[in-house]
Image 1: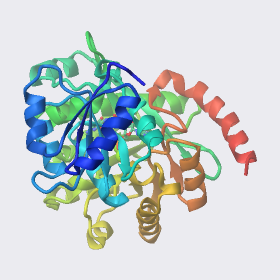
Image 2 (image 1 turned 180 degrees about the horizontal axis):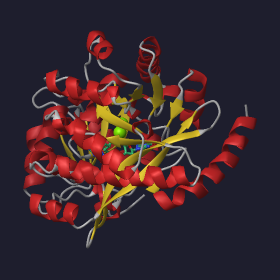
Image 3 (image 1 turned 180 degrees about the vertical axis):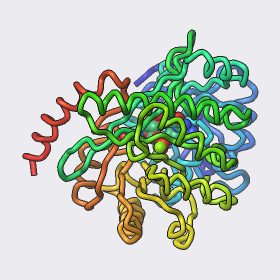
Length: 402
Ligand code: C2E
Ligand code: MG
Ligand code: MG
């Protein structure tokens, strides 16, 4: 337990606040309490040193927990949250997700009444903000800076392996772009793809990523490694029908066959005005590029829309994969996505296979392909051949456990 930690507990139940105060004081924390959101916001606003951690009830009569989170976001709260409420598991998960979507660190949730051990365990996970991984600290980059980076070759491709679940065969890689920033180190795509889309730089960015990926695919092929190389497209890349010709010409120029390249488009973005994107995707498919639906399950595609899109692969979003083995709701989402993929004769990929439990679950499910930290994180191209050798050994061991 970090003795210097400052905790604020917010709950409309004064008795519970007393119990928590006693529990946490016994653990050696500094603890303040408020019984309504307004007072809590005033408490936070009245001091220079914000609490490191807020224990938050969800169901409160005046300002509920979700509204309180929204105010925290407006106030740029950098501390962490633990949800402590009587709501059911699903509500708590939804609230946790919402807070995380606002970039607030959530250590977890507990059901009332929570034991002192459970609370201590979650609090023990708290880390001071400066110890958070560098790419979790968000910095907003400007369009000019990004434009220069694209022109100067500061964008580098990393590649994350995709393996066949039954045979262990490394069938391909997904290209994930990183920005090798001269002073900030390796910057992750969620910090600059949005900027590129907003300022009309995404076509240039995608071309750089595609060119490097196609080159790399040829280098691998020439060394005897046949890998299907996937590249993420932005929906904003699919606004002009010229794009098909640009991609085809690029592949031909580099000497890559269309069959070596797979283009991923995320499901959420697929569902807006489909006319032009549909034409572009269909033409890419006719030229024998492979197409993949990314982050499946996060959008609202109807069966009819899916049937009409000429895809080869469906990637089940990582939020339905990690932990699915021990969570019935995730499992239900996973299973129905998998069934849909099979019915539409698409290859199914489980994204976000993070640990052995996820791997075991995916193997049992009958899903075709897996991708995730348990198998490997994205890596520079040069590391891949050596990784494949070590994976083959590891797969052998994993396989013999069954
Ligand atoms: P995505 O296409 O869904 O890519 C998967 C993301 O999940 C990657 O994050 C990957 O590193 C991460 N990931 C892989 N395995 C695991 C796992 O087991 N657990 C967890 N928690 N995460 C895992 P990354 O590299 O930060 O990319 C984030 C997103 O940025 C990508 O999501 C993709 O939508 C976008 N992106 C990346 N490169 C490009 C690009 O070249 N062009 C465009 N338009 N978007 C890109
Ligand atoms: Mg992707
Ligand atoms: Mg994905």
